[in-house]
Length: 202
Ligand SMILES: [Zn+2]
Image (cartoon, rainbow, N blue to C red; front, side, top):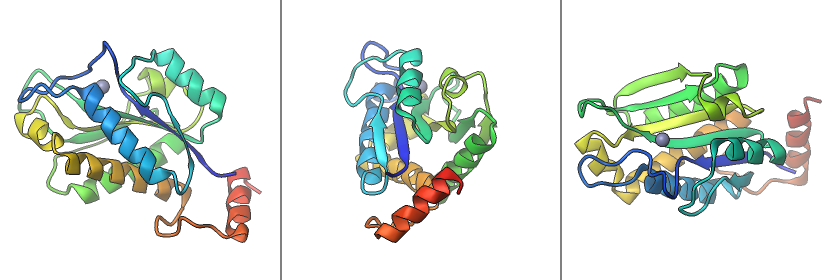
């Protein structure tokens, strides 16, 4: 038994989400790539549920139902931002405002800020009205790694290394939340028992 993380890549299929102002890069494609990279990083440490692992559309109620039924410990929804003004840039993380969600958002946000210190930090924002934050039963966050409506950030996130680093930041934030050492994927039996007891609040 280990912790369970649901990775929710936003949009998909007929729903492209935001579209890059510079090269037309779809948000749905970018966040799927980030999510698959995140899964690969997480798998040695936790169980992972992918809401989607290809370019298909999944409704918001279905995304929440999948995570709730699976009994995820945390839910991470991955998005990229867009705005009418091409000047908008930077990253932000949304939380429902519940204690666990805020803690998770802070940890992921801190890792993102640490990874990309030059990027505009728009902060951790409470947005309980967001569907996937309101209808999931576990701590849940929604990350907006950059703006596709900014030519510069559109070019930047089109580079695979950027998406790898974004995935790495979410990965480290998740492990921080669970208090797992990323350098120690192989757990002893004793450590597993401690983790389970921790998890159950014993
Ligand atoms: Zn989106």
